[in-house]
Length: 277
Image 1 (tube, helix red, strand yellow):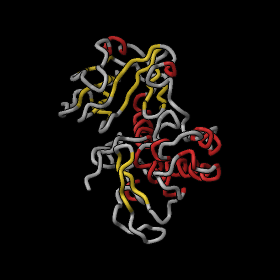
Image 2 (cartoon, rainbow, N blue to C red):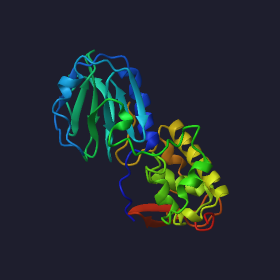
Image 3 (spheres, rainbow, N blue to C red):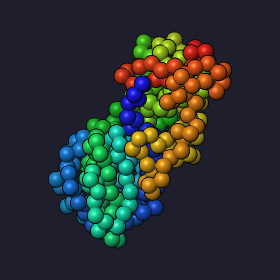
């Protein structure tokens, strides 16, 4: 069965942020070069002028967005389905799909490569949490304040499948297809189970499994499937540790049963019918 292309998820975005931060933070920008503004949302035609002379004060992440703090405004970067960021010499000839360069003022550039053009480079004046793309996002799964109780409360009255609910960024951010499948396996919960039927104890297990899965993926540099690479060009290696994702028909590491594949919310979903109830 042909699997859907998988977009960079929280571990891949956080890995990219960490990779570029030493090269970007503290730099006085010299502007931008926009070769193709037609991304998921149009790149602002004022980007070059807005960035020139601004200092990068911070580089943070909210969900799957990288936030470049520039004083009284922020630049929002999103990698879309297949985007990647790299730091290159500014005079490096662009490859096909190298759509935007952020000029770092030292002869180097932060370059967005995005074959499918589902990424974004946007400006967010004022507090970024008020931006329309960020203001309705749910909690961060790696924040200390998010736990099984919060997940249990968020799933009450939700009849949708638990996998669909934890992939909803209004419930919790950054849990995409790979890590939802992996966390549900660790927690022993069938992905199609209605969210409201997942018990408080099971929500505790699931919240812990989500955190453990994301932290392990971060340590491994993310999962490299199809187009994703880290900011330095290296491949992430968490895909070597997948327990169910992409393993349909292969034996479960826990019980030996064949891993099944189904579709939930138009996404390929991998699970063990014996281990997950």
